[in-house]
Image 1: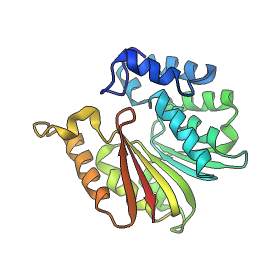
Image 2 (image 1 turned 90 degrees about the vertical axis):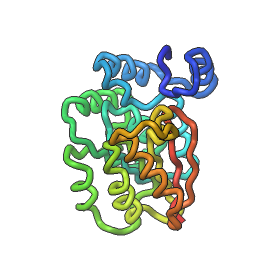
Image 3 (image 1 turned 180 degrees about the vertical axis):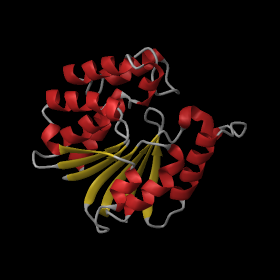
Image 4 (image 1 turned 30 degrees about the horizontal axis):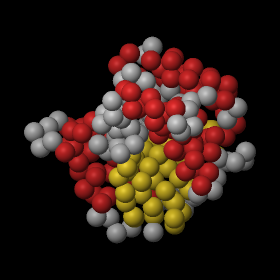
Length: 219
């Protein structure tokens, strides 16, 4: 908790925030610790308060079929799967075999592996192969930033009315609000944020959870 992903919170406030929500259990904490051993890449793991929010949201909307683009070491998938019913289904899309092997071990430990199907391939290919009809109740996008608009379009066609899309890193450590920052990822996130705020097919709210989480409802 000494380096919170919630860049707008200091470590003390962040620790208090996590402790006064539903904190990570033993399996989740072990996954956090193992992911830390990956060094700088560990920053790709979602924050614990975001995971607790996602589990709660999945339960609140009664989601049964969910999708994730960008799985990393599996923390977000674990949180989504825990919110699904026993016969719920989560399709995870990723391209990294090494990191997702860690994920699979912790899904087994958490007792949610039977709900999760992992596809190791470019997500655009996996999504294109799915029927183009309303199927998913909830989707989470946390992958390569320039492709966010592509994933969004592919998912929206397969999301039921009133379904939810969650999109991670939309504040990009505050860089999106700093005009002097012009790197490719920041520009891509700004473009996506502008795109969805004016899309008539969805309702949109950006939440200051962790590194920014956009919450979209399909009309």
